[in-house]
Length: 318
Image 1 (tube, rainbow, N blue to C red):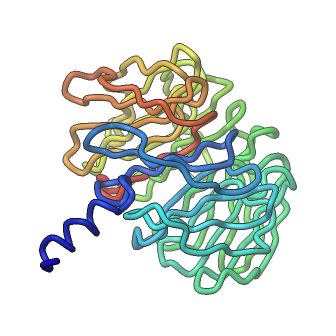
Image 2: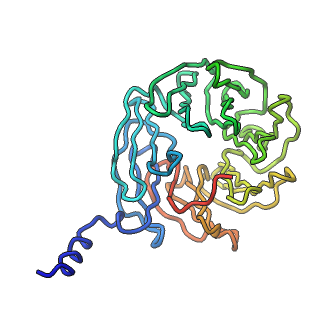
Image 3: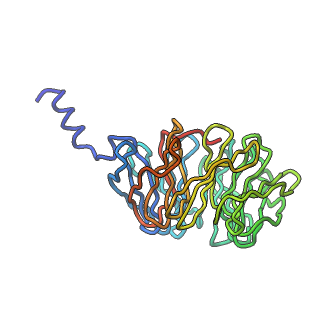
């Protein structure tokens, strides 16, 4: 058999999801991840994850996709190109939402069920400190200097600031009802907090600890995803009817909104800026929005309660 024919047979034998650009979708209720071909928009396979997986995120270099496994107290790393499991990191207590500080020194894990925030050394995932965080630490953001981590406390309607230098709580302030997603503006000036219970974005001057503006989006304002242009951020409004708003971080106003049914939650944006992908938590789908047409153009069936989507060919994070 000649070498070219042998190579062709080997390529044909590869898993489908390893041959194309892959989107990885976390199915929380099924305890697995789906692999979706981003060219054909079809699910090509699944892999087991762990007990009660919640959010997914990439490492800072996009070399791995991490699944946070709350009940099994571990992190599962997947190769974003092939979908293969890379490794498991044990003894990460109750990880719900994850984050790396911008300087890549700290790996922060919100233990939503245990009301605390755990600070790990990002190089080896060794525990450094545990900070009490009542009640229900949800999402997180950082300042550019990596001095502070900001945590939304979903059941006490507060914002917690942790000083990463001292590994202790620096301050806590009351904010809107049921705060979830949080995002730092590119100029490091404001924190944007999604107040699900108030249906708005709270704009917070974190240096003065003041709420400077409240901006209505739609019911159940939930999470953020930068468009990648350094100015706009997408905001998911997580109801069955569902929508996604576009927020201008310079004018601090909502400039657009489009319908996205099924409980839009976590999002990812194509590098060319043409598509926004959103997990529909209540519909067991990933909704693909054409950003020129401003409407859902594809619905991709995946598992139950999809809670996070990632692909390598994504837009910038600001």
